[in-house]
Amino acid sequence: MVHILICDDDAVFAQALAQKIRALPAYSDRSMSLQCLTDGSGLCALALTKSDILFLDIDLDEKNGIDLARGMRQCNPGAVLIFVTNFSEYAPEGYEVDAFRYLAKADLDKKLPAYFSDALTVCRKRRQTVDILCEGERVPVPVRAVTYVESQGHKQCLYMAGWSRAELYTRLSMAQLEDLLCPLGFLRIHKQYLVNMAYLQTLQSTGAVLTTGQRLPASARGYRENKQEFLKWQAQQLW
Image 1 (tube, rainbow, N blue to C red):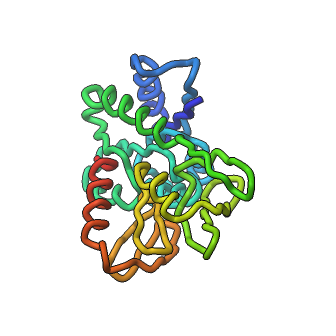
Image 2 (spheres, rainbow, N blue to C red; image 1 turned 45 degrees about the vertical axis):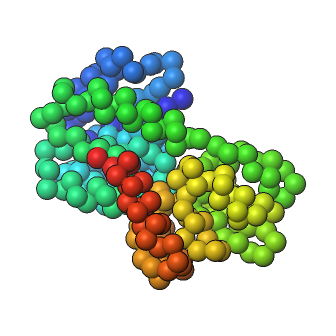
């Protein structure tokens, strides 16, 4: 089930957007649920954590949509975020919170069908899992929940976000994990670290900063190639 949330303090607009989404060919009542959240007191990051696709207004009466998205990303990194607003000057800030699209309300009828279809494609991709042998048990690991992998000698630790377990340990080598995860959006920034680019905020030749606040070392060797790969990945994800 794909959970879709419209978050806008204008109840009339929110309901109109909901009707337009339900009328799209890509929408299905059997496999999707759609909810509108218009009460200002309920517009908090916690309320956004269960959504797979989120249509979020930036300019809210009581809260700022960008700030809400920042809080949401800490516990729901996999949500496909579409900002819906009349204020285009906020658009550059969408990069900070991994926004998928910026949808001007004036362009709703023109752009909504394609944006929704693209969002569904990305949503299904982000829900992908990989089977990893962890402590003798084959575990289906959500790719989007892995923030980074750290080599700890003969075992590797997968650090998780928004999942039932905070850490997973495997005896697969870093080379094996690199082959498994790099095609799915991971980057080997250091001999000891493999990072999910969905959580990568900044990358420099001396270190990296994740959206979770974690700071990791990075190797100068291969930095140029890694930077290009990161920029290419960003271009595919945003706008």
